[in-house]
Length: 311
Image (cartoon, rainbow, N blue to C red):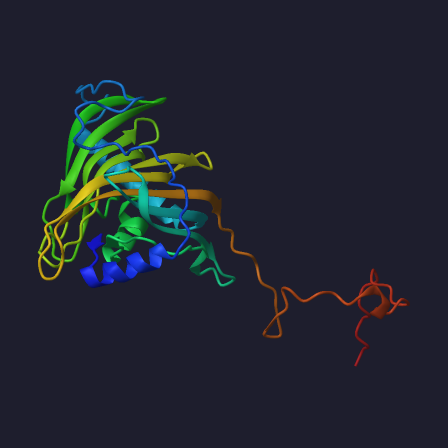
């Protein structure tokens, strides 16, 4: 998330002033990775090792399952609802909002497509969405940790924990080395003890860009996963909240911005490619049969074709 320059902020403020105001929506506060107490529904953390396998074997097993999940999600359609709010510290009300609803679908050729179905006027005044924000929404907030990703991360087993109705293994994860122009997850990961899939993550995308005049910051977030089709744990809800401190410089003012983000992933449906009928090089899949009135009523369609005359 980037701050707006004073000139651009003035232009946006004028546009917002001309818009009708809407009641501020209420959202639950996101879990803070640094919180001293676990949120409601979390049992105590038990440091006991896994039963019947080592922590390293658990990591290998759930990473392999995540690889399968990652490929499976590419074959599902779903709706993605994004809402980003800035919160006034004086009134604790929304004073700027970005919202977009997108359907992730497939075309007839089976190619994945995105269709924006709702995108009201962007009224964010103090910050602007950066390319990193959109990449986070698409790739990092619905966090996965596949076998291919393991070499990039340091993963430490923390213990067992009961979360709502699930028994989970808990791990901390963070990048081994930060490569320029790459972003990573850093925080906690909860893995279901039975399905060996991620069911909850709590952390943030790193690194933030803190260079004066180039600042690009993001708040900590929590992503929840639910079981789809009885076998895959897909992300269904992300909430993030935090105070972003922009130091200013190079024409930007120093400011603290209270940011609140929610992302919902809903209506998961497995995509089934339809068969096509090709006749003489032409796709006749959607061509209709001729109407009954145009058919030869004297023709018995149940008869076999006439035999060829002998030469």
